[in-house]
Length: 599
Image (cartoon, rainbow, N blue to C red; front, side):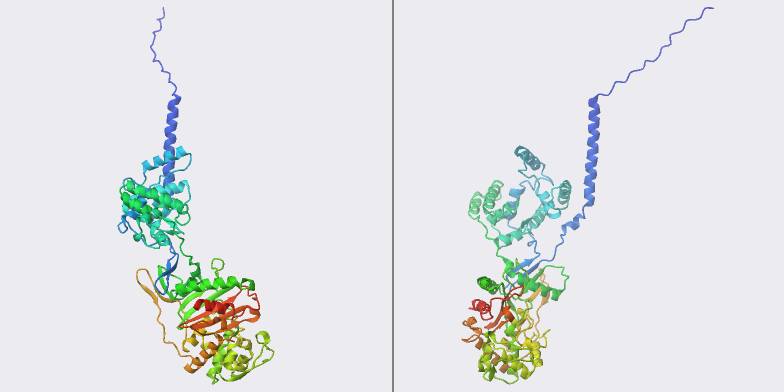
């Protein structure tokens, strides 16, 4: 049987897959990479955002309380921690002040968002053409974000934070408020912030008082405060200020005539006065603040002090000059204290150069030498002796203590007045032996200088320690009709809002010496500055009297005297306690400094 032929069963033809083009592969890879990159950027931005502290808390800048010291006439002496001026606002300022800033820093500020993309693009093109960073494209909002919250470090993280903060600021505040933040936080002069601080430092006026020209000069500094400083680089500052004036005209902020007038008023700014000469004083007062208010101060303070700025500046200049002239005699330092007879300190010169040494010689303990002798003579006068009583000046010893007179010169029988005027050593020792060392130490305690005095006869001749401030206060008792004197430097402490934290309320002074003892002591001290007295070089119209002092080996030289209602103490010596030339005594350099201050 014949087999049937196989039927041709149709089969489905399999299509061959075409390979994917490399172009499509590249495009897919690029899209994936972009998505991953965007995801990475988003993740990085999120991480940076999460690492930032609370934005609201960042606006409340923490800083040490600012302390402003004010003199007896109501003028500012200097400030500590005053890193910001008085807050200003667009609404409260003359328009030309903030318009100068907008004109040069961000002319489209009121028309763009957080970032000025047009300005950024323009700056990018300019920089590419120049091959360097020739222009900046940051909006004023970005600058505000940087000034308020961020460090000046140029890092990717900081730039990302700047962008985040810029959008946050634009969302939270109005344009005017952002401009307020910028004007109050921008750093321009000596570490202080805000255009008000710059106005006060450069032009000695508030931001509200700035002229168009001054506003342009401050705005010129925004690019680079030091490079465009009207103090350090006045030519660059003035050139840029002129550009700002042109921009203000171009943007219809001021008229051409106003700009031309302002251009004639641009000038190099004189550096502010060196306030280092007040630093010894403000350091001293700061200690008194702490004693009155404690160490925990949580608000800004206005401290009204007793200082007389003119007297203080004059005393500082005189002291520097005399110390400089006596350099060859190994006089290295000087100090001055001036106070009223009731204890208000009017001047305190703690040294010749605060920048070189912050050590306050006006409050340092040194040996007063013969400047201590008034204590002994007060005992004698109070016990009934008179200035005309005869005493004997001759070699004298108590036990093993055998002091000599200066230049070993002795005068024999002399009056008590002459003994004091010539500052002989034997007489106060004989008086101490007669009335007892206990009486001398008790008198020193009454006058406020008895603390820690040794019960030794050398103490009588000043081989003890006290400060110039204490010695001046001791003499002030004598010139205050024998009433107590407690030195003070603060009249009142207030907050800027007007709250009084401390106000001096002096107690009734105690009568320490009777009128006759005081009058006779005045007679003795008056003889010191007359011809033949050790302080003759201090004599000048109005000088009432004084006392010289020189410690062993001429290590300390003093003069304390009075004129009208002021008592002035002067010290000269060396910080390392090295001797001065043998010709330097209290009657030379200190007496001459005293005279030049008061004459």
